[in-house]
Length: 306
Length: 273
Image (cartoon, rainbow over all chains, first blue to last red; front, side):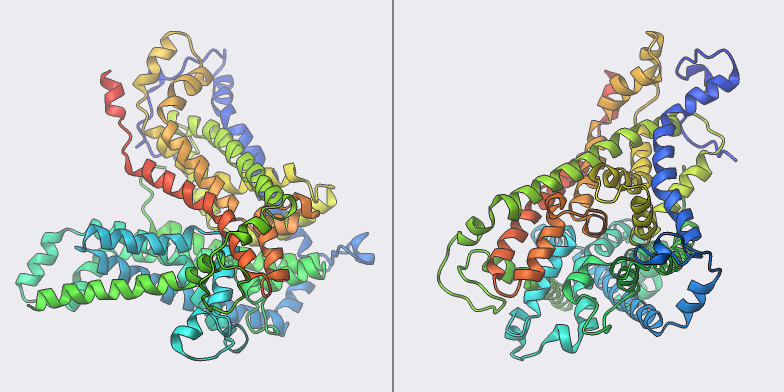
């Protein structure tokens, strides 16, 4: 299975092996991997397998089911897919991912990267600076920024000259805008890197042939960076699917359940009502969706030397 | 003429975008130096550092920031050590399952950590680890490992093997060779991974929020949130000051890594030398 493309040394120039047998040597070679494998097994693979188990029980942290949890088969999943609150959260997560990641961050990141080509260094640094600053700041602080920005007499309403309680009247719009603001830097950096690899002579040749800027973009530039576009879409979808802190700090999922995406619903079930079995079933669904997107991402990128 | 118009339009569009991105920062920056600032973006000519003075107390900011340094720092150090060890055989030997292993790691980086925290919480509860900072650091390390091992292996691949041969001739085993030859040569890479993990954990809110029990164990991410939900409406100036104190280290470290990444690692020089 090993693809021998790595610059690994031939056996002669390997570190000296002092073991008597081949098996001993192989074991010694793998020894440095042991701490990582132990940690990954105990704290990552273990919990994932554990969630598969408890998702089929009625485990809670309070009440009688906390002492002796019962195996309940598919009951949690049957409940899940008939639960209007879960379906609501699922729909809101879909809207959140499409609105803030696929449309918002992706398009805005691409537009900024395109606009920045050929601009003065100062312009590029300033734009990069403010866009990246929004990305580097912790999500709780990002929420604090948007809380005042969207307040009734906050910056946005003052600039627009209106009075609007955004977090109550349009909570999804508010969290989508906040997440576009916070995450655009990633797409911008991905597209800046991708665009710098597009050969200029191809684009210039098309210009000589009379292709306008729009046609050059649609028929030359975008097809050339399509792998980056797809990989970026997968990555930002994965990041946005699991987004918790920003929404939780801004709206708490409310008003009511108007902005309660699936991670917030999972939090409420598992950590507020201590329905660990049910919460794990929700977590498992999220993990499966994440795994699906992650597999698509692996198919899309070219892993040259692993 | 049209070319000039297009360039002007592009610059204008960038200006509008930059202004839109500055918008949400504005009031936080201004409110932090406005005494008695509220959510209302109404400017007063007064300037004072009272908000910073008010929040710079042991319980409000100092202890939470120390907790953040301890949690993020321990996770970064542990991750670098474990990932550095793991990267060595992956970079230096022809291992049979290397490619599937590396692909599995890459796959793992895509899984939502938010979802993994439900079973982690249940496990911590069962094994009496709930509220334990060391246990949480081990979990955070495990969740940082897949990506860090990838980065470490790539940095290590950049260190030519022939630089190690002299050490082997002198009788050094893999551990000596890793710590005295490979390690120092990839110091910039190690710094990048460490700072990357540190900044990531500095902003991590959800894990300490659900895995730690007592307020005095909480890092700044959680105390900013608590402060925000309790006093955000009334003492916005203080919240803004706290937010700035908490954000500054992340920004400074990001700028530091950015510079490091821009400077290319000159391995060619050490091969010749």
